[in-house]
Image (cartoon, rainbow, N blue to C red; front, side, top):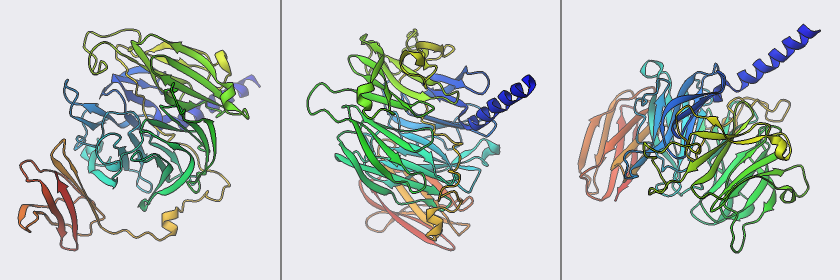
Length: 499
C-alpha cells in the first residue's frame, strides 16, 4: 500500500510538471531568469528591460524563444522589442518589433494548426498604433527560428497596458483580450485566434468605465474569471466564457475614486484555486493585498500582507509560477533619472537582486507565507516586470458545447486570401511590410510616390506564402506612398503615410 501511495504521488507530480513545461523558463529584468523545471533555479538571459517580457518552451520544458521590450542606449531611447532564441542570441530578423517598454505589451500564442509557428502579439500603450502581431517560424535557421512577418497592424488605437491570452474551450484556439485607451470606455475587445487567422474583435461594453491606460487583466487558472484593476483604483471581476469569448456579470469590488487619494493598483493575480486575488499597489507607500473572492463582499475581506513606506523601492508585478507559488518583483528606485533605469553597474542590493514569494497562495492571510526578497536571482537584477505567459497547457472544457476542434471562423467558412499590411515606424524610419497567403512564387516589391513615380523596386523573396521586409524610408519626403507586392498570380496594394 505504501508503495502504491508513493507511486501515486510521483504520478501526480509528473503530471503537474508536464502540464507546466511550456511555461518552465522565465526571462525578465536585467539578465535575470528562472528555470522551474530543473529545481526552480536562477538562470541568465539577454533581457535588459524594466517591463514587458514573454517566453515559451517546448513540451519538454526546453526553451524555444523569449522576447522583451528594451532600450538601446543609456539615454533611454529608442525602445523596441527583441526576440532571442534558445542559445541566448538575437533571433534571425528578431529586432525592431513594436514595444515601448511598458509591462503587459507582449504575449506569445502558438499558431493553431501549425506546430512550428507562433504569434507574438504586441500593443502600443503611449506611442504608435495599438495592436499588431509578428510571426515566428521555428523551422527556420536550422531550428533556431526566425521572424518571418513583423509588425502586422490590426488596430490603430493606443491600448491599455493589460493584454492577456487564454486558451479557447476547444483546447486549441486562443482568445486575446485588450482594451482601447484612446477614450474612457467600458469596452472589452476579445479576438479569436484560430487556424483561419485572427478574427475581428468581439467588442463588449461591460462594467465600469476605465479612465486611463494603466490597467491590468488577469485570468483565473481555469479561465472562467477575469479580474481588471487600474492605477486610480478600479477593481472589477467578470465571468468569462471560453467557448464564446463573452465577458459578463461585472462585480465592482472598488469603483474608481472621484477624489484623492487614489489606490494606485499596479498588478493582480489569482491564487491557484481561484479563491483569492492578490493585488499590489505602488505609490509613495506600496502594499500587497489579499482579497477573498468567495465572500459576497470581497472589498470587506481585504488583508494587508505587506506595507512599504521606503520610497527607494516599489512593489510591482506579481505572477503565478508553474510551481503554483506567486512571485513579486520590486524595483529599486535609486536617485538616477529616469527612475534608475537602466541600473548603473554599481547598483546591486537586496531589493533588486531578489523576488518576493507567496509560498502558499491558496491559504488565508499570513498563512499564505509571503516572504519578501526570498528568491535570489543569482547575481542578476529585477525591475517591475515579470513574464506575461498564459497557461499554454490549459485543457479543453470537457463535455462543454465547444469541446470540439472546429472554431468559429472555420464554421463561418473564412477564406484564405492574400493580404498585405504596411506599418511605418517613425522612430526607426522604416516601413514594415508583411504579406501572407501569397499564391505566387516570384515577383517584385514596388513603392510609388504620390505622383505615381516608382521610387523603389526590388525582387520578392517569398517563403511558404509569406513575404516580410523592413524597408528603410530614410531620406524620403513626407507624404503618401503606395506599396505594391506583385507576383505572377496576384497584385496587392497598400497606402502608407510617411510623416
